[in-house]
Image (cartoon, rainbow over the protein chains, first blue to last red):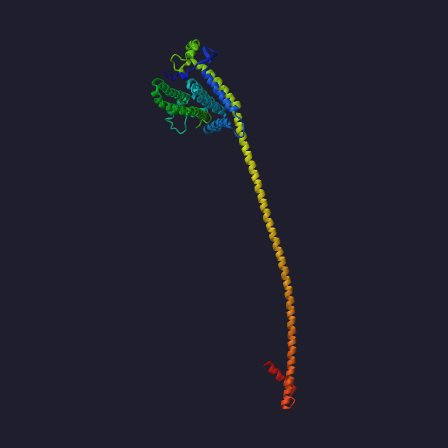
Length: 249
Length: 188
């Protein structure tokens, strides 16, 4: 019995959609889980009732709404509510797909750097274009912190500019690496249980208890991480958008 | 994506066999650039669809429900406050009414008592005056009677004294002398 913790990240084309230039565009398992996430969110937000006293499903929909709205208001102010649909979409997309991805035998979209990088770049360019559109050249004030002595200002500005352009990197790698590492660890420990059970017989069944306990603990942790990383991604988006809305911080 | 140009050409041909094999020739899947394009296209379609659903339908719907509830709660609270104010006003009116009625009753009671007091006082006074007049009359009568009686006593005493003197001395005493002697002894 061979453990292959990487196998779960394989992209498997289900059918080919067409070609753009020399690239084959296929509908893959990743695509399938993206649409599953979209479908689940649409079901949650649209199929739930509109009662005065909400039921369970409606409560979940309303709690998600209030949760994201509160996050935006507290980090980017009420002007940030302009980006409510964007941040809500990002948060729900990542949260739902991450939570679906924790279910065994499913695929985790955000375990692929290209996906998280695309979302991070979407946020980055939204911040850049909205900041320039709204504030004009004043937007570049975010690189010039107030109250810094003039002789170290060039250094500080260099660091600020560098950190601004590295934002999409840290933004995307944080999510990607968390999901990837978590799923690999889960797979490795779960694999130990099966491997001990298959190879050592009765002794292996006893010995498998420890990795099984670890797997359960890790699974709980992964559930938390799945939600938390979606939240971190959303709150960082809010913080970056806050720079575009109020550049003179 | 330019560097994956040549590679993608090869992948396009080999995609099917790889799918069957399930292994990408040892390449770490997240860094396998051959499937970037597929993922980006699906992500773009899925995310744009999600954004449209969320921004056009889902958020206005859920937000509307929350707002409707908020409005309902505020309306109900305002209604409750209004009713409470009304009942407070009614209670106040009732209390004012009660105080007024009590004051009225007290006033009527006082008035009646004073009227009755005054009437009984007047009656008492009239009675007393009548009694006093009767008393004065009676006293006057007593005084008259007494004076009469006293003058009768004096006459009788003088006559008796004259008679006694005549019997003892055999002389008729002077009437004036007898009278003054009687007066003197009556006074003494």
